[in-house]
Length: 171
Image (cartoon, rainbow, N blue to C red; front, side, top):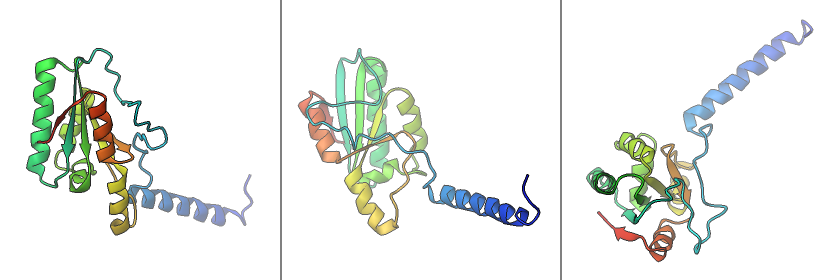
């Protein structure tokens, strides 16, 4: 049992903890961490978030521009591939870096489409180098859509996938 003299202190402490938690939620710092390849990236051994053991076609798409029309074009291309091959027969990785990383930011106008295509097996990779450059301006790492996967460098990820036999597309 808490003594009466400690009760106001504990009540204040709980209030401060709640305020801190709400403040962190507001900044995005309390958000669950995105999947990441930062610690286990091996150039000669690509890994993927989605298990697609029967994929016969492999495509990597580069998104490096801040234009939502280009983002939608990349998503349309991905949907066309899914429709043609079927989601179990094609592995699609969309890599966003530079100004194109805005596609994968929380609140992006295409966030709903990203979530839907992620559910169909499309992987969305976010360049950590770009995230760090943005953090210098923002004061914190940018908050990504939940399905974005953090990779060390977008261009290195594209090279890795091309070396592994992926077709390269830049919408």
